[in-house]
Length: 85
Picture 1 (cartoon, rainbow, N blue to C red):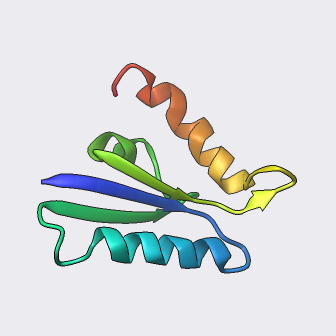
Picture 2: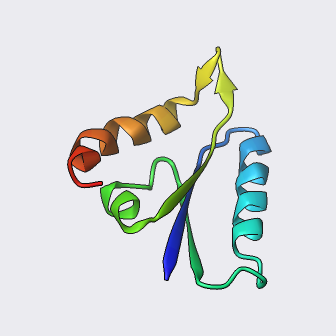
């Protein structure tokens, strides 16, 4: 079964609402054969990334860039996943 990983970070609720919509859409009963795993950016890790077949990311824009928590997620998983994906 395919796995979609939803990684999100939100301080005000906007990006969390987007993550809710992404999760609901990807979990729709009309879509068969897809498991959806949802993680906060600070809780997601290498094992989550390696187990997933696809990724949906929701982050606010802070000063023209992704949130610090989402950047932290990418920093933690990039090198451990680099040669394994």
